[in-house]
Every structure is written in C-alpha cells, then in structure tokens.
Image (cartoon, rainbow, N blue to C red; front, side):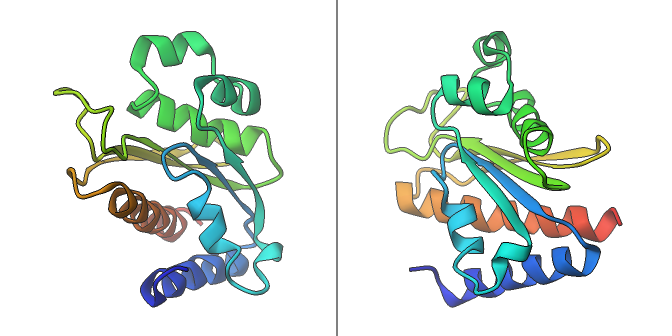
Length: 166
C-alpha cells in the first residue's frame, strides 16, 4: 500500500520515538488517516502509536480536539493557527507526548488564489507546550500525490521535532 521509502521513514520515526519513550498521536484532515495508517503498517507500532484523530470536518476538529469553531471560522480550516491548535489538541486529548497534525487542500477542487490546491499546513506539538509549524505548497499535482507528500513531510517534521527537543 505504501512505498518502501515511506515505510522506512515510518520505521525511523517509530524507532526514534521508542528510544525517547514517546507515544504519538495524529490529527488528520486532508490525509484522512494516512499518517496513522502508515505508522500502524509497521509491526510492533502499538507501543508508540497512541491514537489517530481523523478530523475532516470543522465539527470534528471542535468535538474531538477542542478547537473553538470561531477560530476555524476566523482563520479557515487550512491555516497555521488551526494546524497548531489541532496538534496541541491531539496532545491534550490523548495519552501521547507528541502529536502531528495536517490540514490542507488536496484537490482537485477547493482551492482559491489565497489558498491553492496543494497548500498544506502541518504542526507537531510536544507535551509541555512547544509546537512547530510548516507550510507546504505542493501544487496541483493530483489528490493522491498531495496526500502522500503530506504524509512524508509530516513525518519528517516529527523527526525534526524529536531531534531538536529531547
């Protein structure tokens, strides 16, 4: 289902989390659970993967992650502030010490000039409050390609956070 390169990346993330004693949660919108799906593709991942939130709708983001609907309405679901709130909410509403969140426009429709197809905001949050964010503009490369590129970039952001934050 996933490429060998993505599986190797997921194995590296799980190994690093295991060494640090961290459990991971995901909060996914545009990927619809692909990140947690990739992580759980690896045998033995249950000692690291705590849970995955698929929060495709704005209501799910509010109900499951505690994000105020007013924050989403003011900034749009595809925004830095919502990605950060999703990651922080995933840590707060789980038993994980680190969470990754993604929200974006996978296409083929839904894009605007300000928020084009391929725009993805992602964030990783650690318990204790540190959250990092990245914005990616993958372009209109196809829905599947945007989603898979998001999975890869999100796991790389998790790696970066774990490497810089013991």
